Amino acid sequence: MRQAILGWLDEPSAATAVVDADTDRSWSYAGLADRVRRRADGLRTGRKGLAVCLARPDIDTVTGYLAALAADHAVLLLDGTAGPASVDDVIRAYRPDFVLDGDRTARLAGAADPVHPDLAVLLCTSGSTGSPKYVRLSTANLDANAAQIISYLGLGPHERAVQSLPLHYSYGLSVLNSHLLAGASVVLTRTSLVRRGFWDTVRRTGCTSFAGVPSAYTILGRTGFERLELPALTTLTQAGGRMPPETVLRFARVMCDRGGRLVVMYGQTEATARIAYLPPDRVLDKPDRIGVPVPGGALTLADDGELIYTGPNVMLGYARGRADLAHGDELRGRLATGDLARVDDEGLFTVVGRKRRVAKLCGQRINLDELETLLAAHATVATLELDEKLVIARAPGAGAATAGDLARIVRERIRIPTRYIRVRDVGSIPRTTSGKTDYAHLEDELSADDV
Image 1 (cartoon, rainbow, N blue to C red):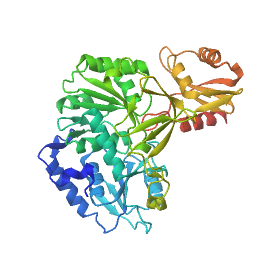
Image 2: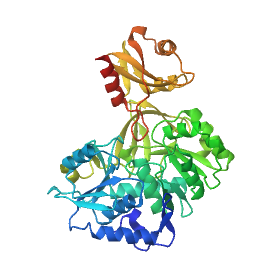
Image 3: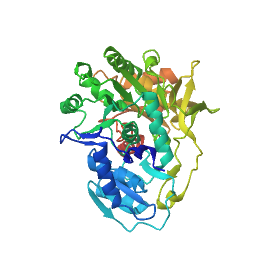
Image 4: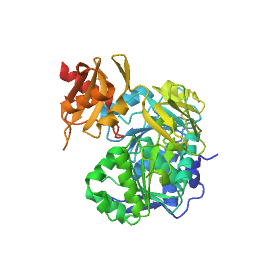
């Protein structure tokens, strides 16, 4: 039986599937199907293998990804801008049968290790390149999450999304998968979000939706999104980390004034992409919530407050090398998210921090994410525990509180002596490619400064 997100291959329509805004070319579902079939024919081997796809925002990446799935291979999506060393590390760890780079296909020796028949996609957990740890997603995971997204966003053939997020990132890939399943279209562009030409593309191609992580909305706030004329744009979606409530309110009000909506979402790569969403009619009065579980999923709280998700989009498990690709479903649809949460009397959930982002100083447990949220009103910061100290990394910015002010706020809030608080100035807060704070990189940076 054909995978649901590839169902259109059987009877492709004349409707537009993909637009390349940079070349002014477009492909109907029939045209895309022809490309996918021809490339898939060159990938068939008679056994399920592994294809590494170097992902870029272009038609060759979309074709290669879909063709590998159509040829019944698992696909490991890797950042197409990754250096040769990162690609070599992945090849050594996973011994793929193919490497798809643009319109080029390299056939490798592969490995004798079998690939589980349910395995469809491998995605890096952190958004970084070259990491040996990947999430194993099944065909059923991809189909289920795409259907969930279609259901709560109400996607249909009339929708057109700008592919503003990388395809090797679970949020970005979910945009493509859900729109193909819905018979909608996506617009590819290599123009950066920070350039005026990006929004010219959105306007010219009639995009109805934009998906962004919190750092993207920070950029939009600085570049005057409110002043842009975007008559077709009716939906903004946000995921990839917590966005400050004041930012949520700002963009929700803009979209409401335009007759549109902001949909705040919560997800993890381990759940294919999406776990929860905040119904748009609750954004203005509950901007700090992640909302309710996606259709077909359920959220509960463990005794320690950890958020537990169950649903058909929960991954099979992790992989660190080729041998792990033979494994089946190890989680049985249950995911311990690692996030601490609470739920209100209306059934709306709020994430309050990470289970592992808890420091213990002076006999006190300190939720570093809650503390970071408190300090964000005073400066651009990241917090971590280092050498039995609470370290506040402060980035430059207009109106930023002084080191002394930050230390005082922390001392008054969590009641620990000043000697356990250290404020360190950094050039910027490091981010992963998915826009989240890269705490591992920050810790390395601060540790190196102490040497």
